[in-house]
Image 1: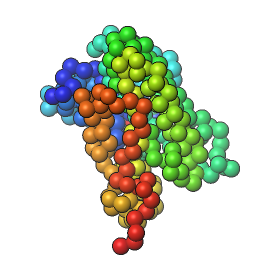
Image 2: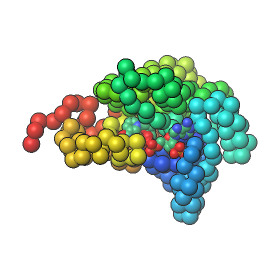
Image 3: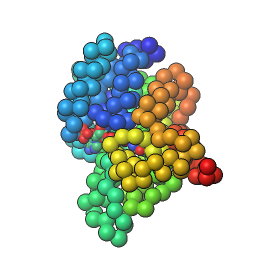
Image 4: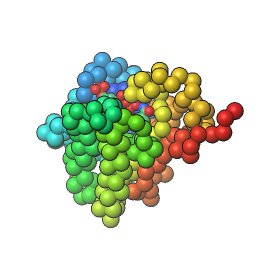
Length: 253
Ligand SMILES: NC(=O)c1ccc[n+]([C@@H]2O[C@H](COP(=O)([O-])OP(=O)(O)OC[C@H]3O[C@@H](n4cnc5c(N)ncnc54)[C@H](OP(=O)(O)O)[C@@H]3O)[C@@H](O)[C@H]2O)c1
């Protein structure tokens, strides 16, 4: 158990990639807070699954786009468990539409959740991590920041900003022993990618050199690396985990 006793917070921990990361951290001995917004049942199911096998995982409700809720969340975590060692900013949404049709509410929702949510949570832990001279921050970005899709101006902007924010924050926190990195997943089989997967069917795999979609566990393993001893001298990086998607489509079979 490489993360024994560490305190970890995973936003969007109720489902998909966040759930896999939360489970992985708990299985490595961390005391995990999985933050959900609306999926209470899924969060409770996760809590039961992890505690049932002897892990420590609590669920807490919070909308990460709301600064006051985030402050209250981290105050609660600190008083309940102690200062946070590992923060995973995973909560994210898509509201796709062509730019000319996109309403400001769809732009704002995506930026406020994906970008401001990350900022709010980093703000809540950064000072304490600096004082402790240790900490790991892992932001979940997307290959869609650089390999853009039609209908995702808002999403691409949010993830591109997360990449830039990750590098800039890493530079500020590095002298205090705090690492800040991002993971940029490709197509991962979760609820978020369901619409694209349903539309494209098996053809989607033809765009991926490894000829398979990613699983949440593929991302969780990289997050565990960054959170653990392996990541101790890695900071300011955006690590792409996409089965080669960003290399471009492989030659036809
Ligand atoms: N799936 C992919 O192919 C893919 C590819 C690249 C990047 N990503 C990124 O990976 C991350 C996780 O995506 P996923 O595929 O696992 O998505 P998902 O299955 O749709 O899960 C999204 C998670 O984010 C939470 N969430 C959304 N808005 C929130 C808010 N305002 N406050 C707190 N939690 C909030 C949801 O909580 P509730 O259900 O409780 O509301 C849920 O746990 C996202 O940042 C996404 O952009 C995904």
